[in-house]
Image 1 (cartoon, rainbow, N blue to C red):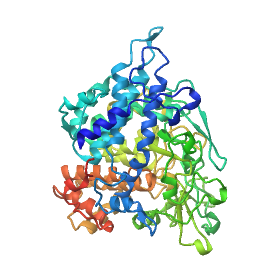
Image 2: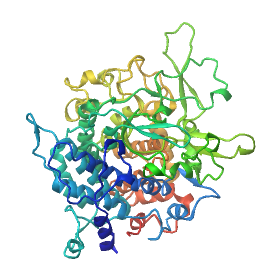
Image 3: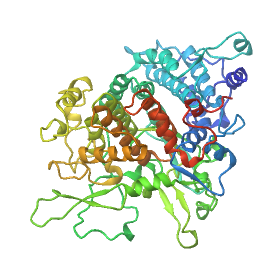
Image 4: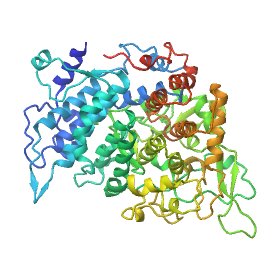
Length: 610
């Protein structure tokens, strides 16, 4: 069966498009195994052929990552394949279980890597290297997904174009660590590379049936090398290397990309403001760009990498994810956009976490300086409300998820990189730095002695080992300002308002000791374990805070199962509460799924390989 999968992947071939106007249009594809890659510009079509292959796996990527997590709930209309993923009973017959779609990307990348002439120069610059490195990043990402989903998988880096190549080779089966060991050393030489943009900021790829115009940004279709290296090292518990590559991306690579900033000032939009009775002293949240703007049509806000899907079937590969969430992206009439047959809705776990999360706001205090005091308003985190549409009247029980109303599949955001950096720093013992990323971001303010929750060891780390605040980078991360939308801001504020302290230390109720202390109590209560005050206790608690933030921030984006599995694996490897605590933790989070297999056994975390 494995050889058949690889054979199909090999014979599908690489795809080329006939002109830039046909970018990602699969109807213009043709096999070009004998194509030349020795000119400066001819490989753009090979690169977009790989992106076509990425389109082919987009829906499966999201469903594999969401159905096995705790963000979604089933409805009467949920199809059987999704139900089987949800309750861990999926067999090799499941339509969303296909290793082939990942191998198709891998083999296309292998062909490009084997044949691309990397010596071509413009002046003294090797002009094809950014694209060459980006293709290797695609390959690493595809192998990473295979290992996450299937455990051990066949590994090969040569392009397979003939059945005889398959029959005469006995490919090794590698697990996650083995894949990282094989691919990461080669990728290291491309650290610091920006992705190619082909000189195009945005390209119009047509309009949907309902008339909505759509563009793609070529630079957002690639995965930066430092991002995928950070991901590979984080998965395998190499936290120092992960943090170093995330730092390189955020300090050096991110700003060099068109329209990209280190982290926008993204603020919550009061999702039910018309129905809310604001506190009498309410003076508003922070000013800035609305968090929900990330998911509007043609937005590049916060985006690092996405898969743009075609606007209709005549133009290429479409996505079924919006429809499963209740939104008919391909409807002819705008009146038909929202459908009754919603297959997936927000889970009880997601709604409970959102509702229980405090919202912080600026208070008006007579005689006090502006924005000096912060109050707490128990209306919950606002992110879930921003990406859902609730029915009224006869439809009052319906909830439509609107995160996919743009027809794109997000892989990475700047926010992803910051939160994964926080996860790595926390495991390295810098829990205060991890909390700072949630609270107020990594800015020059952390060097101020008034930030008493930041230790000297962490300040040293942030100026030398992970040099955000070094003399060379300090100006890139200034203290927050209401007029500065390009510095780093706290991630938790995306849905919960004023979490940072600004120029008035101690003003926000969102404080390290308070928040971590409550999480420690929750862990003791939920798992009946003796929670202490050691560094390992704090690391575990902050990791759980990050897990909560992942859920609030990335719900429905296809990352949840991978985050849970990674955290569970790392808790099994290092936890103050026993060597199987991660498995217990994971099983507890997913007990509402009534899984067909015991999640206490890590072998049951994987799908059947087909």
